[in-house]
Amino acid sequence: MVITASIVGWLINELHKVPSPLVYVVAGLLVFGEAALFIGFVLPGETTVIVAGVIAASGRVNVVALAALVVVAAVVGDSVGYAVGHRYGERLLEHRAFNRHREELSSAMEGLRRRGPIYVFVGRFTAFLRAVMPGLAGMSKMHYRRFLFANVLGGLVWGVAYTLLGYFSGTQLTRIEKYSSWVGYGLVLLFLALVGGLWWRRRRRHALTRSTPND
Image (cartoon, rainbow, N blue to C red; front, side, top):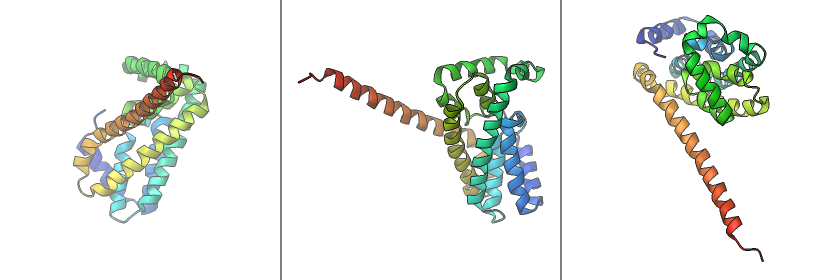
């Protein structure tokens, strides 16, 4: 999904016009609605979060409060998306709006079946998957506790990272927004490396235990 500079510029301009408390409201609602209401098809959440972070850098809003709001909105929005998918998923996917995404949706469902919560976490850092992953997780009948763990972890990392990305970018928003997807990919690779390292360590320990002769 490509976000043009005109959309970014429009969002900056509009958020600078509104009173400071409304910046929190707009950021929270857009992040919440990305998965809960599927508006992520129109405006990816990271764009809103980065722009709000830039506004926080000007001192109009508190960056800590903003980051906390973004994390909560992301987690709650995804939980609503999960509930909607759990109850209405099959009927929703029949809507023609999803016709051109059939292949991507099938691939996402396969990823959920194979990797479960890990795929939920990874999906948080991709615009399309972030919008549909909670609903697909609900459709797949993944246990909510497993979903919630990955949802909270992903929302925390994503929300804090992109808020600070906007905050420290200052006037360099256009350049930062252009490379924001690479930041997401980097975070995903770091997480996968950590999971892989823990898996390898556990496997090696298990192999050593099996090879040790009993007294």
